Image 1 (cartoon, rainbow, N blue to C red):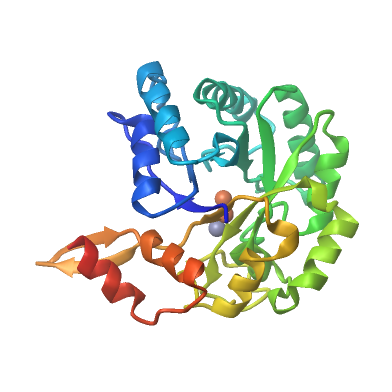
Image 2 (image 1 turned 180 degrees about the vertical axis):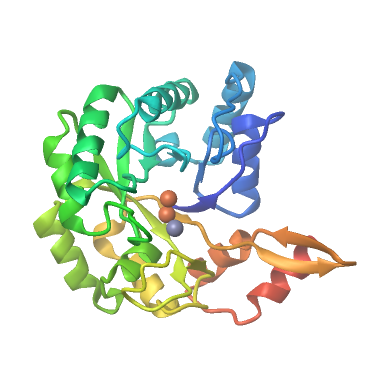
Amino acid sequence: MIIGSHVSFKKDSQLLGSVKEALSYGATTFMFYTGAPQNTNRQVIDIKLTNEAKQLMKDNNIDINNVIVHAPYIINMASSNDFAVKFLKEELKRCAILGINKIVLHPGSSVKLSREEGIKNIINNLNAVGSHEVMILLETMAGKGTELGKNFEEIKEIIDHVDYKLGVCLDTCHINDAGYDVNNFDDLLKKFDEIIGLKYLKCVHINDSKNLINSHKDRHENIGFGTLGFDNLIKIIYHDKLKDIPKILETPYVTIDDNSKERMYPPYKFEIAMILNKKFDNNLFDKVRNYYK
Ligand code: FE
Ligand code: FE
Ligand code: ZN
C-alpha cells in the first residue's frame, strides 16, 4: 500500500524533516510544497539534508519515485503573463535537485477569460516550460469559481496539445464536487480510461468531501466523515487498478481550543491506521487530540 499525506517542508530541516514527519504517520510515501504555497520565497535546497533524507527513505523502504511535490497554488497557468512559466521552471529545478520526479499542478483558472482562452494559455504556457525530467501531473479540479480541469475532457484537451508527456492526479473530493459519482467508482475509472487513458494516472488524492456531488465547492473532509464515506474511499484506495499509484491524504487538521489559543493537529497517523485496518473509527478526532496534546 503506497499511502501517505501532505507533510511540511521546513526551513531548517527541509526534505529530512518531511521524511521524518511522514514516518511519524506510518506512511509509505508523502507530498509537500517546496515552500509556502501562497508566495514565491524559496530556499536553496540543502544537499546535506537532502542526502540524509534519501538515506532515511531507503532505510524505511520509502521509494522516492512515489514521493510527490505539489506546485504552489499561486501559479495560474491559464493567465497570459509569463510569471507562472518562470516560477514553474524554478520549481521543476528544485524537484530535480531533491530527486523527486512528479509534481502536481492545478491546471489554472480562466478568471476573466473564456474557458477556451484559459485552456489555450495553459497549453501555450506548458509548452513554454519545455520538456524536463520531472513529470507534471494535472490535478482534476472541483470547478470552484473559474477553475479549469473540472472534467476529464478539459484535462485530455491539455494533454493532447502539450508536446511532452504529462500525467494526471485524481482528487476524490474534487471529482465528487465536480459532478462525478464516486459511488460507482468502476464506471468512473472506465470513463477516465476512455477519455484520458488510465496509463496517465500517476497519483490519487484521497479526501472525503464536506459537500454534495456537483457542488463545485472544494472543501476537504476527514476520511469517512463526509459525503463520499469510508467504504467508498476504501474501495478506491484498495482498487486493483490503482495498486501501484501513490495515494495522498489532504484532509483537514483537527482543531483544539487550548486555553483560548487554537491549535491544529494532523489527523494522518490515525487516518492511515483506519485505512490499513479497513475499519472506520468514529473517535478519530479525540484520538488525534489525545495523542498530540
Ligand atoms: Fe491540489
Ligand atoms: Fe488535491
Ligand atoms: Zn482541494
